[in-house]
Length: 103
Image (cartoon, rainbow, N blue to C red; front, side):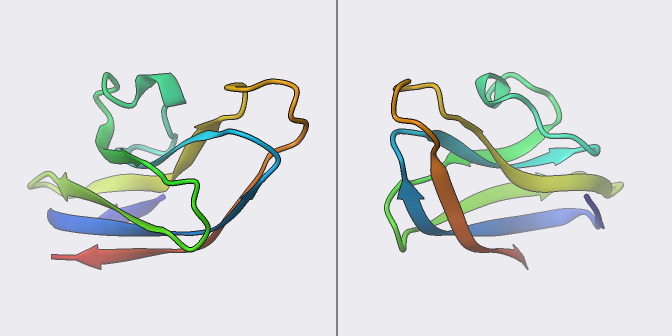
């Protein structure tokens, strides 16, 4: 969680690898100090921006969002569901980095 001044931002998620099966992953920026459940991306009022992240190694995915005029504490991260295809065992979804840019 970080305090951000009002303005437009872009998060860039850099995907390293995926091993072990299917996974549904979302990159997200939300006000406050928690992240929503993966099923609530579109309906949670705290979500400032989100995007489903790719499962391709080496891929990058931007997430754009706007912080309101008064600024806000924003939690940045990813949420996921590994139960899409049960029976694959452990899922290893790795990021090589996340960058935050202010427009």
